[in-house]
Length: 299
Length: 250
Ligand SMILES: Cc1cc2nc3c(=O)[nH]c(=O)nc-3n(C[C@H](O)[C@H](O)[C@H](O)COP(=O)(O)OP(=O)(O)OC[C@H]3O[C@@H](n4cnc5c(N)ncnc54)[C@H](O)[C@@H]3O)c2cc1C
Ligand SMILES: Nc1ncnc2c1ncn2[C@@H]1O[C@H](COP(=O)(O)O)[C@@H](O)[C@H]1O
Image 1 (cartoon, rainbow over the protein chains, first blue to last red):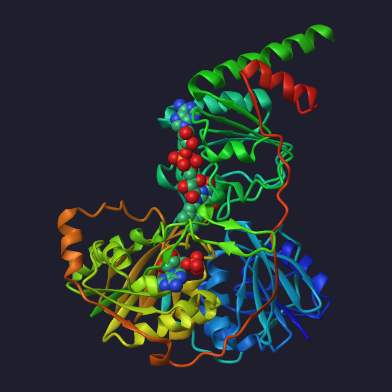
Image 2 (cartoon, rainbow over the protein chains, first blue to last red; image 1 turned 90 degrees about the vertical axis):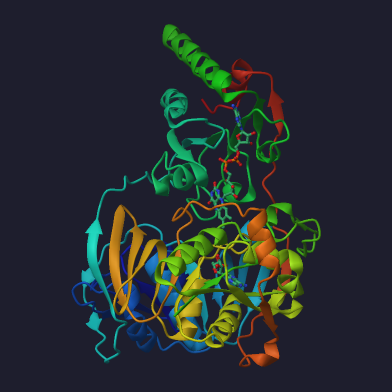
């Protein structure tokens, strides 16, 4: 049996950890990258100038000769999901997401944003889409996979780099998350003040990042955004839909500030303040400041 | 020339409940067009109008996807017609098989040169059906697409990537997953809803499509234990700060 990893970058610490758990020999297939972490076998599918990784799907399908019992691990990123889909369609294999455990050929997976869990068995190779994880150091040892497989006729004709990048929230100890309860972009200053007095990172719900674009696209938390596990998560003007809360399950303490006492967020919170954020946030900053001054006096 | 958009008739798991055995009860959740699919339909409509192409909707779902609610909801968004697989057993299919059935529907439509999907479905949230559908069709696929234009031999596509965008030229047909903010969605008006009633939605059965053997067995179910939360409502900011301090969090 073989565990396969398909990737376009070295941000695969999560996949390597899963491969360790599976215990089979590992083959890494790098697409457009030949400096890769060490493994039992390391292949590279080269990309000619201007070819997007997605266009190399035929070569990836040829390189990954997965058999029943094998697992194919793929990071949850746009390019790699496309490669996973092409491969799974060719193998007639299921693609699993939300994998929480693997034992004795059974995959335990979260379904529907984590409300239910299933144990899955398949007589095909299993394709697993997982969070890629941190970057690993690579070495130049990949063997080129040179079987001719015609790439799709696609070519990158232009690139822009303008989007502001968000912060990696996965190791943040404190987070202030803003939702659509804020009426205007300028009002986020209130949340920034709170984050500053708590020494916290700023995050948001998906519509704040993607709907109105007030914060960078990659700064939202949830099923399709980041998963966080801070000691303190303060959600302000966030309704607390399942798709958001799925990213906060592991937070130690959740605080909710919302003017609707029936907002779902309160059922997921340790502490709640039912009130208008435009009044609660300044009061909170003042209360925190007062405490800090007192602390200083005592020293 | 035909543009196809795959739409899903699905319920929000927010409104579902799960029993101690892990069985999901969807009876109180109302199915609807999956939240981001109207964005893909809108992009498809604008493109089809611009290049004079037909716009066809395809969907794989239970019998409800061929019901009048689902038909009106989808067709009022601007499709010319629909083709659906409406069978209750499809609720248990894994996504590789769902995508295979969608590919079967696309193959029954003449002259398709572009298939669009939404970003992610509200219940599965996998961002995978576009990729699997492309795999079954043997076509290229791109996700996070924010813009599409017709070129002489294919499509010019703008894709959001971390830190920016890139433009990609594809010759020939493709499957594109449309980003959730690619277009401002128009809410259908009375006229659109009335027009939707006159559009045809053809339904096929699994037997009409090629058989599938992509199997996956559910060996067990459970309800994950949620972390216990205190659910304590405090009076104001000062009380909140005291409580957090008492917990050693500040
Ligand atoms: C496939 C899919 C994937 C998704 N993935 C994610 C994801 O990863 N992350 C995510 O966050 N969302 C995700 N969503 C969206 C999610 O379903 C919700 O729509 C979203 O989380 C709601 O954002 P919100 O709470 O900011 O806004 P709303 O739901 O509009 O809530 C705003 C809240 O602010 C409160 N409020 C209003 N005014 C005030 C005030 N003055 N003071 C205090 N409170 C106030 C309101 O009572 C309300 O509760 C996804 C949706 C889909 C379909
Ligand atoms: N059963 C289905 N019928 C039609 N389209 C679907 C179906 N499932 C998923 N899709 C499409 O694929 C997109 C991504 O879904 P998913 O991979 O489940 O996140 C959705 O937004 C739809 O456009």
